[in-house]
Image (cartoon, rainbow, N blue to C red):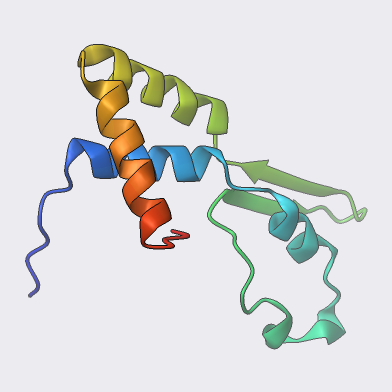
Length: 103
């Protein structure tokens, strides 16, 4: 069993920011796929925001996405709770940019 290291506050802040900035495009693409498109059509789609998808008997489609505004509120709380919170956030963002980290 792998033991994971506890994420730092900067890691949490970075992940919250990335989550809040995710586009919903791929969730919409998934919803519009047809049965004949096959499983390869789903490969590579970013579906982290998608929490639920439903299609009713009459063909109506409902997508439920994760709460990005809630993630931003939590991010603001984390940054306000620590006077150096903003510094942690910007250091994490700079570090991610230096390493070309997209996730």
